[in-house]
Length: 104
Image 1 (cartoon, rainbow, N blue to C red):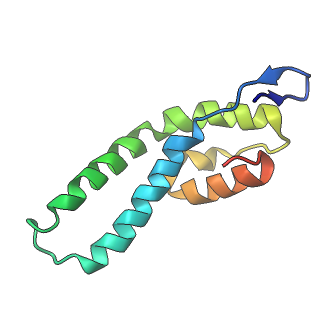
Image 2 (image 1 turned 90 degrees about the vertical axis):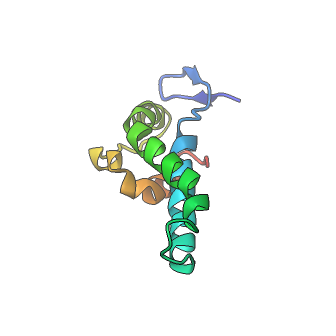
């Protein structure tokens, strides 16, 4: 499936939003797990892969946001703010992306 740009070009769908969605999933898992887990480091070890994944995704987020930003700008009238590079806005970014592009 391709998307038509304003200039009539066809672009393949961007999948750069997937790592950004991964950050949202990690944030939700951490928000749900932290209050119910005891403060003992040994019992918190199962959460370590989630924390590491969140850290890696957050470090790589500007690399993911930039190509997706170019795609969204090419296929819609939404002009993204540079504030979306602050990945704490990931849920808002995905919501606004859905409103303008339709995916996710």
